[in-house]
Image (cartoon, rainbow, N blue to C red; front, side, top):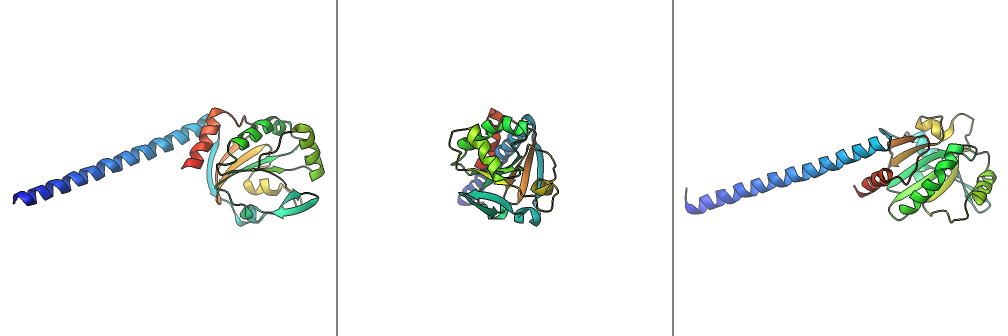
Length: 203
């Protein structure tokens, strides 16, 4: 083998070694990130899901209030990288207890791609509006949307499509995929929960 051929062979070997080291480094970082998210899941007591929403859930008609007018919206109409779906009601004390921290967390992420849907099971929007007028004088974050589930035909409404009868219960949705579920009231400003949402939005 000539000197030039040996140099070329050496350079190719060095290049291949570099690629292998780079691949191992990337794989290690990815693995560490995944492990960290799994640890945050455990510490926040969230349940990992991973199922796709059925068409019935994406098309389900919810009520939104625009001034004096009631409009209908569906999950398929919403455009956000990450959606937090919170099932609640003004007659639910644990729901009310977690609401201040949910509003505070919404403010933290209002320019980072998180949309919060507070889906109420109250009888009317008048009840919901009266509650918020007494509950807080602060401006509701622009990414915190209050909706009402009219529950046509009775039954559990949209929360039944998600697979629950309980409130408060919260689901994190990315596209059509339901990532995790939080059962019962939470302090949404806990450091582990904030770190979990940061991880989801930065991936």
